Length: 262
Image (cartoon, rainbow, N blue to C red):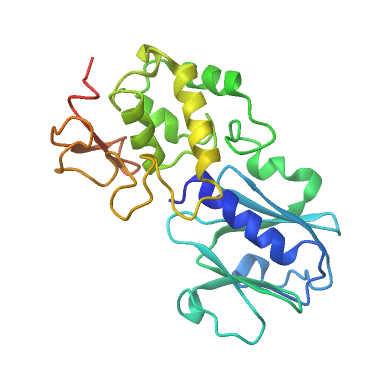
């Protein structure tokens, strides 16, 4: 699933293409919204909220979309060939005379009044890249379930919004925390939360995500997707396992030497 910085950058690009322009083409290719008419409305802004994308219109409506694991928005000039998958995978098209924004496999499409956006995203915790970021509130929510494994807690968007599987593994490595540690036993949760916010901010406009400081191919992660390979810090073999209860378990990697179980 795309991390919060990827969704933030998608919102920025959509906002550049759509904001301040009236929609001359607006298609929502899902049964529940197939008759919804947005053509003629002017886009006021496209913003991210955690991993949700909110397209706000001057009519007082908001279109919500979510990328989940396989969704993407492609932005092309009118008349250019769309690329991103087969035509049947297109779920939404928003266009103006300058740009066509094509949503491939985007999920959770919904249209609500803008003043009711909280019906869709109000359950989310503080957004690591949003104006509502509140580190103290994020720590408070993490500690609300002190026996919960910290790797699971970081992925819960109700706790803090924006961390995915990659950042979960990388942040825990950088802080020397074993992913199965109870959240209440993590020595410095404020430090972990602060690092999360700083890394996502550092990467949000970067051409490639990195947690190591290197943008060279194959060198941008410490432990993520590196199970069975030597740790870049100590040389020990990176190990991996599934974390979480079925069917919601997610893979996690860690260095047993740099992140010892306690």
